[in-house]
Length: 160
Image 1 (cartoon, rainbow, N blue to C red):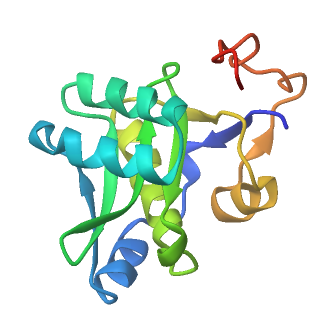
Image 2: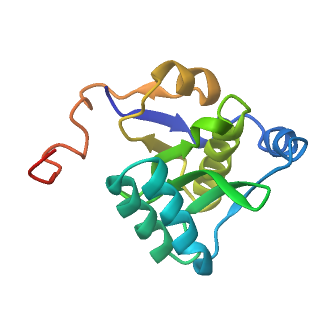
């Protein structure tokens, strides 16, 4: 699957996505450093060690380049940006029990708006899962020739 390119100056509005989440009792916000162990624990439990590595890089930035979705004082989703490479969005994930409520979209938009506010005109979504989702949601387009991406040659434990 190819990387995708997003025009950050042409995003759908963020406020409706955040308001829709609040109406469901979900808060989308940037993390703060004392929460690192909680967010890393969530990502480790629900996703993968590779994603844990990227979340740890997001916490190393000041301010952190990570947004979380919180419901009932519990992390239910996350998104990081500017971790694997400058201007990159992802990884992102929402707990299986909380999917289908627009949380992933709100995390995506919050992250892309943060990149725009940091001075980027474009963002790259590295090896996205559902291409159609990103096309529909933020007008992303596949980058020709980006099938291998920056992740080619990624080191993996011997048993993976």
